Image (cartoon, rainbow, N blue to C red):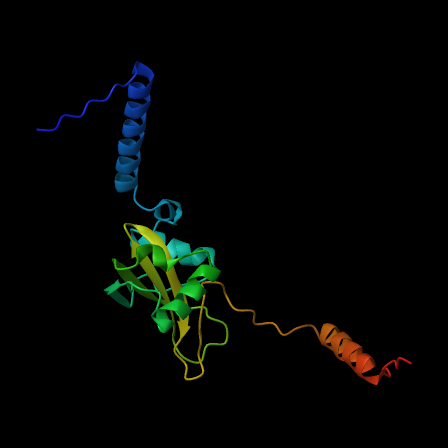
Length: 181
């Protein structure tokens, strides 16, 4: 039989106990607290909250979702399609990698005031644990695009600005190159 003894001072025993208690508290807080990003995410647990969220971007939508479904966020960022979609999410302050592998709800609303729409346009809102975690606006026209929640710029650049830029480029092209001797 082998016996090992250790002599600990009171101060070392108290320090070890404090470290153990801090580690347990940290584990409990991380397990119970959930994702800090979810806590900061906009509320989206009710239909009214989702419609109000879209209204903050200027969208007028049909108040009843055209589609409601569960979707699973991919487990890996190696998925090229997911990576591109998540870049769109990051550009508007969301990050779906925080929800990798989770099932979330997707609510699709028809947008009624999309500028110059030739086909139906839809807003998809992703919700996890009652919070909006992402989404997009999809123009279903053949040449339509997917973009973030912001209304796209519909006004062309002012003619003066375009003319000034064109003149500046022309001037640069007409200047003779300086020759070094």
